[in-house]
Length: 355
Image (tube, rainbow, N blue to C red):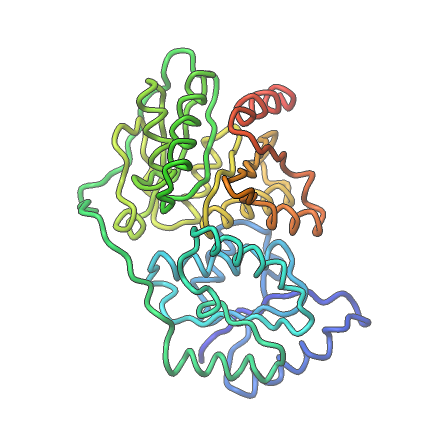
């Protein structure tokens, strides 16, 4: 029997979505789905969420998105983007009759407008209004599959790639992890990334990244390497095929999946910068917030700085996401700056403040 992961929030007997959720449960059961309900009594960890996603054949999200549901939804979409075989043709449907998921879709629309999400995400994350529509959408994916995301692959031989560890450089006082895009090609963004890598090293910090060769991610690493700094990164085989690996990494941690990849990057970092990026960067920020909310020791005293970059047309990169987080009372979990020169001084101040 196929298993559907059902995620969502019910706030007591007077919850207006209670009736539609009960109807949805009946329809899923009568259509032959084995229903798995979110976390149950499990602690909220990236590993537990990964297990739920891998073990499921489809995903349904009900009205009233929590931080955990947002993370799961974007994680599944990132899996589609990066051609993760474990997610091939697993449908994702959001019951959005009350429009509570609209702010999440606004974030994805904004990233699509800025060019960091190139796929038509609504072909992968299907929004419907009624419980009956959920069943129709799942049946359609089961019958026809999902669109294939086409990528150019790099020439790295995965069998020749191993983890390795290099010593910190003299005077290194800590590590800053930069979560950012590996697909942006705009030269202004690439130059900002390169300068950020330089500034990090000049202040005494090592650079942790997702170890992608392309886009802003590759530029940040090059800036740090060219300045003589320590650089560490983690990546997974199926993403290395898409992004390649940058030259000059001091340490590299090969991991089997994006969840253990995020965990080692978080573990080896003292602070985090959310630079312009796409769905993967959104996923990484939500992971940080989820772990902070859960009181995970991996995030103890580790500040998050969001770079809400303003482009030449006056567009702020992360403002729709910042608004979504403010509406859900998570704005105290991070600090926002809008100037490149503010990033490292702000991170340095917050690290010292928390120590």
